[in-house]
Image (tube, rainbow, N blue to C red; front, side):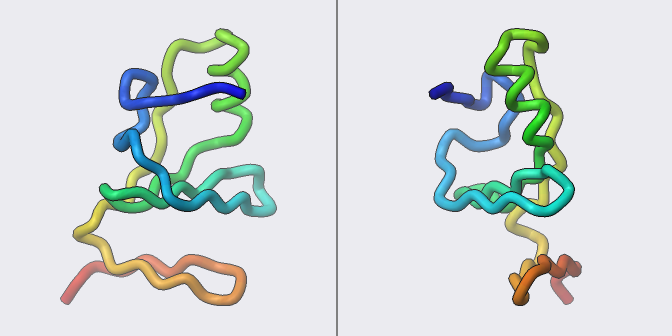
Length: 77
């Protein structure tokens, strides 16, 4: 088991939910919003092949709705 923090590129040290999609991406829910990171990148980080990850961040200023099998992102009005 490995621990990843803001030192490795994540925007938040607290993750409350993790969802893996069919494309091998992990969607992490935390205090600062939703983060999408490649599972492969995290595996490479754990194996010390890379020093940091560069996730896509959907912050709290974005409206996020979780549907049956999808996430829908839109700007707040």
